[in-house]
Image (cartoon, rainbow, N blue to C red; front, side, top):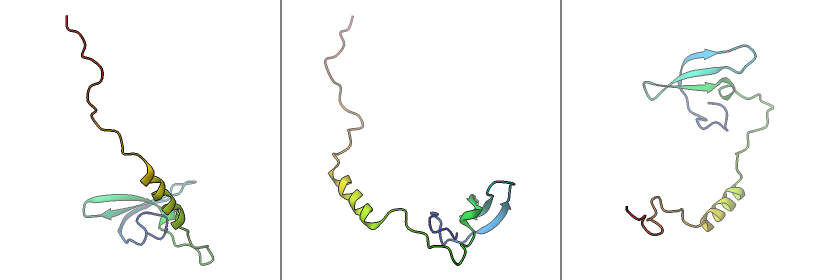
Length: 92
C-alpha cells in the first residue's frame, strides 16, 4: 500500500487480479492471511508523484488530545438492562 491515509499503508500483498473499469477507479484483489481476499482501490496502491505533497495525518496531535480530554468528561454510558420502572401491571 502506498497511500499513507489507507489503514493498510506500508503492507505488501500478493496481487491476484487488477480491474480497470472505464471512467472509474479500478481495484486490486489481493491475498490476505491465506484464504481471505481484499479489494483495494487502485489509487491506494499507486506511488505518488515525486512532486506531490506528503500526506498529512487525518487528525493532529492537538486535536486528538482535545478529543481525549472531552471524552474523559463524558458520563458513564447507560446501563444495558435497567431495572423495571413504575408499579407492576394489575392482573385480571
